[in-house]
Amino acid sequence: MTAPIGIFDSGYGGLTILREIRRRLPQYDYLYLGDNARAPYGARSFDIVYDFTLQAVRRLFDSGCRLVILACNTASAKALRSIQQRNLPAIDPSRRVLGVIIPTVEALGSISRTKHVGVVATPGTILSHSYRIETAKLYPEMKVAEVAAPMWVPLIENGEANGDGADYFVKKYCDEVLAADPLIDTLLLGCTHYPILLPKIRRYMPERVKIVPQGRLVAESLADYLDRHPEMAELCSKEGHTEFLTTEATDKFDRLASIFLDSEVNSTRITLQ
Ligand code: DGL
View 1 (spheres, helix red, strand yellow):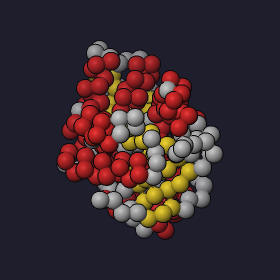
View 2 (cartoon, rainbow, N blue to C red; view 1 turned 180 degrees about the vertical axis):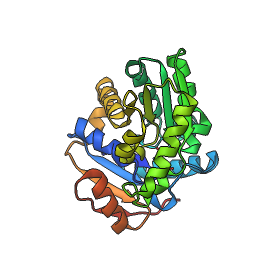
View 3 (cartoon, rainbow, N blue to C red; view 1 turned 60 degrees about the vertical axis):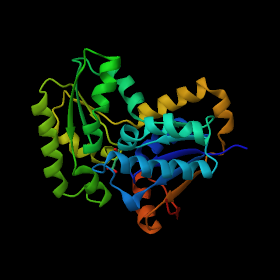
View 4 (cartoon, helix red, strand yellow; view 1 turned 30 degrees about the vertical axis):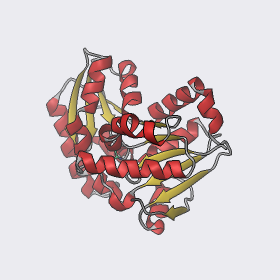
C-alpha cells in the first residue's frame, strides 16, 4: 500500500516548505499537519517540543505515511534525533523521519563567499545551537552569527506580517545580526515561517547580503533522497494530491493557508495527544 509523504510543522510555517516541495516533486501526494492550536513552539522547552512532535509523527504514521519531513526547525533541532534514535526503532524501523537543518547547512558551503553567515531563528533553535554545530562539522572555517527573533512567528501567526507594526521587529533583529557580525554575506532564514517576512527583511538588510529561505534547499534534498532510495519512493503515493490537518479551527487555517500557498485549502481538524 502506498501513502502520502507527511509534512509536519508547529503551524503555518511548514507551508513555505510544502510549497517548494510540491513545485519540485509535484507527482507525489502530501499530508500536511499543522499543530496550530499549540504553536508557536519556538520558546517551548526541549521536552515539550519532543512530546508534541512525537505525537504528530505518530499521527502521520497512523495515516499510513512512511516518510515524514519535520518542516519545522524548532522540531528538527529539539526532537528529530531523539525520534530517530529512540522511537523509530520501536515504532517501525522501516519508516523515516527527516528534518530541515542538515539539508540547509549542506547548501551553505556553495552560497557564502565570505564564509560569514547570519542565522535568524526561533529562541529554541538558537539555544540548541544546531546551526552552529552542524555548520562546524561540514565547514569548520565558517563563522555563524546566530540571532533569535522571538517576535517574528507571532506576527505571522496573527496575520500581521504585512502590517506596519511588523517593520519595527523586522528591523530590530536584522540590526542585531549585522551587529553580531558585520561581515556576513548570507542571512539564513532558519525558521520556516520567516519567508513570509521576506520583503520586509530585504528592506532592512544591505544589498550585498543574500537572504536564503530554506524551502528550495529542503525540496532539492528530498528529491535527492528519493532518488537514492527508490524503495521508499515506491511506497509514496503519486496522484499529485495534498491533504491538510490542523489542531485549530479549520476556517482560520484554510484562510491563512490559502494565502501561504496561493490556492484553496480545505483542512480537517484533529486532536493530538
Ligand atoms: N516554523 C517553526 C520553525 O521553523 C517554528 C515556529 C514556532 O515557533 O512554532 O522553527
